[in-house]
Each structure stands twice: as structure tokens, then as C-alpha cells.
Image 1: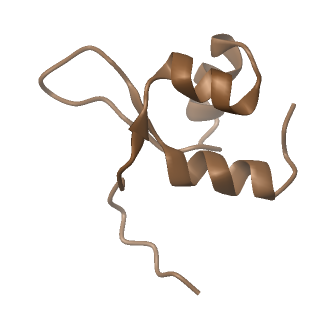
Image 2: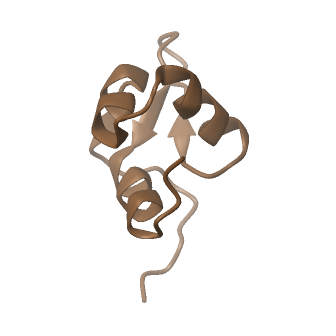
Length: 66
């Protein structure tokens, strides 16, 4: 079992890429982030929110798609 480090790991996806990956609207991605169901980070250098691909894969594997 993998140990949680608290760090976000690459690869990272944009909101639009994550929505396409899960086949949902961008609004759903924002809700999943807000609810803590997928991990994301907002880099200090920009406005874009980046989503951890591993987090999306785990969410999909758990069968929790809306």
C-alpha cells in the first residue's frame, strides 16, 4: 500500500483536461476539488488550478463517477 506524503505528484492536468479525462463538465471537476474528492493545487506563479492525474485515476477506479 502506498503511503500518503501530502505532496501532489506529476503528471498534472488542467481543469479542462481533467473534465475530458472523466467525461464530465468542468463544473463537476470544481465540485470534486471543493469536496476533497480529487487532489489539486494552485501554483503561486499562476491562476490555473492543476489536478493530480493519479487522484483522477483513483476516483475513477473507486467507481464514484457522477
